[in-house]
Length: 282
Image (cartoon, rainbow, N blue to C red; front, side, top):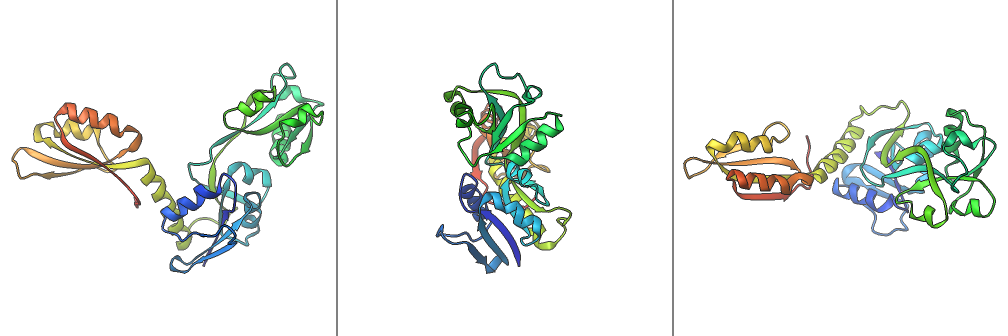
């Protein structure tokens, strides 16, 4: 039975469970559940603190897990990223009071406060900067005001919280993070159960990015039409009862669907429909 760790709370929890549900896996109905057996799919889910997931997977106690890239790298666990999941995107950056430093090279002799001390220590070392690092569990933006540090390193989404604290973002991002599937380093992904899980998750990612588009078009316009809707291999083209017309079906990126419909209509296509994709295998 495949043993998989899932975040039990925080910004990763609900999107991860929703994605697993879309992939056909049973998910918990009571947030107090810590372990859930999905016997039909031969999978056992463990709902753990996001920060602990990499440690459990890296130890080999669990086969795979869903966590943030930032949490994986900060943990120092013997685990690696094997798939990006496209949600919980964030940027990890330095911030300080205006005029303190221009970039990380100016942090020498200062103290940096952060909840991701492993990441920051490594980043400072990579840049040859000798600075102290103080670990805090949260609300690190107050560390400068309270005199604990001159610089903070934190997850940034809009930057509003930092600006409200009188701080400015400086330097290049330390890390671009998102939700990822992780596996113990060197374990590989060749096992049939692991492959099935990854195919299902990949199927959800594709289904979220594409819609199925159907339309009718005159035969003489087919080549121009299918250039707009090339599909993954090629579109399906079927003759209609009315001579000179064909029906075309193709997957198109959902973000481009409205534009493509407009262009098809201008080309003479009619009965243009889009349908959501709930699951797929490519």
